[in-house]
Image (tube, rainbow, N blue to C red; front, top):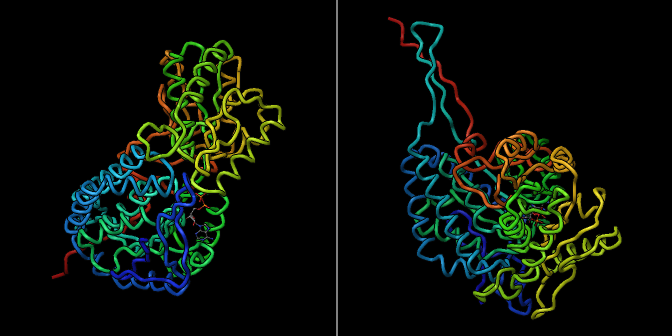
Amino acid sequence: MTALSSYIGGSWEAGPTTLQDLNPARPSDVVAEVRAADARLAGDAVSAGREAFPAWRDLPAPARGEFLRRAPDLLEQRAADVGRDLAREEGKTLAEGVGETRRAAAILRYYAGQTLEPDGETYPSASPSTFLYARREPVGVVLAITPWNFPIAIPAWKLAPALAYGNCVVWKPAELVPLTSVHLVRALADAGLPPGVLNVVLGRSADVGEALLAGPVDALTFTGSNEVGRRLQLQAVERGTKVQLELGGKNPAVVLADADLDLAAEQVARSAFLSAGQKCTATSRVIVERAALEPLAERLVERARGWRLGDPLDPETKVGPLASAAQLERVTGFLTVARQDGGEALAGGEPASIDGGYYVRPTVFAGLGPDSSVVRDEIFGPVAALLPVDSYEAAVALANDTQYGLSAAVFTRDLGLALRFAKEVRAGVVKVNQETAGLELQVPFGGTKASSSGSREQGKAAREFFTEWKTVYVDPPQG
Ligand code: ADP
């Protein structure tokens, strides 16, 4: 049995509590054990980051980039193992696990490249003798708190820019995915990252959360639920800590009557059902012009029923289990509410009994009104609601009738309407004839309204959060 520990100041530190890391496809399968950290170790992690910071900050950026260039080569070499462990502890399919590991490697490489990019600007000064410039400097020690649903890609898109731009990191991964987290740490440690530059605290948030934020850390980047994110944001603001939040979504896919319905159904099914719908960019509201309702529903139902549900490690599997018993309870709760609210399950609508795992069948609901919590709240399961409308205008109004604003898609052959939708929908990411999920790493990512707070992640946009300007006025010495 693998026993996993926190990584603090360059060494693996076992904590006092033992937690089990279970396979959600077969909960009797214990993937690993965690010697979970307590508040003392969490404090040690922040201290290690503080101690390492001055030297890391002062290392020339291209030299920092070398570590971020070596680590992805190691991850690539290990992708089959890392992807399998990811699938085993999180429940997404093997292909998705390996693909996500490769994505993490690509993100590290991208930010290695950023260490060779300009880090400031010169300005004309009002004074003839003054050389005036502004440059980006690291913020300091960054606390990264990450969820379980993309256990290596999301950490990579926080850790890589944080490190590239000269920050030290204390990372608290989600409790469900310690083994994948350790794989990422090992790749960076094996690439020679100096001790203390990256510290990882494996532990229950109830045990370590408070100590991490009190650290003190200079910045908090968080991806997870709105409830936890808002609470941490309040604590961060009280302490004067810079904060960036990536929270939930309730993403609409608008299918207009002229759309290619085979394409629309395939894309909607992918974003609603793959990874068992556990993506903040998943489609959960399918807003359809009435003329297209029946043929779209038919195509969507065909996929929901036909896509193979089962063990993520089986190459035939398309949809795996939910990530935990708590997730199963949450999602089945929504299925019950859907029925109470008059929803009719055209496909799925119930858990599936496979090996004792946490499975829910891909589900398509019809007949739900706009006020049902199934239509309003983030479910984080393979559940899509069909919502018919009579016009483009009604479709946009419904798409925007949500507290969230992460991703939105429109399916149409009318490019004029598509561009109008891109302008009128309130979302951080808009897709035309593509699923709401699926991101490229070189462009900004984040949402509007309750979906995000602070500046965007990914691409060059990440620099905004992980650095701050220093403006320098230089006059030559007199005489
Ligand atoms: P998810 O549903 O994705 O698990 P959560 O918001 O519950 O969303 O968790 C996201 C991350 O926040 C996880 O790493 C979790 O352990 C962490 N977390 C939850 N509560 C706290 C807390 N009070 N302090 C610090 N981290 C926390």
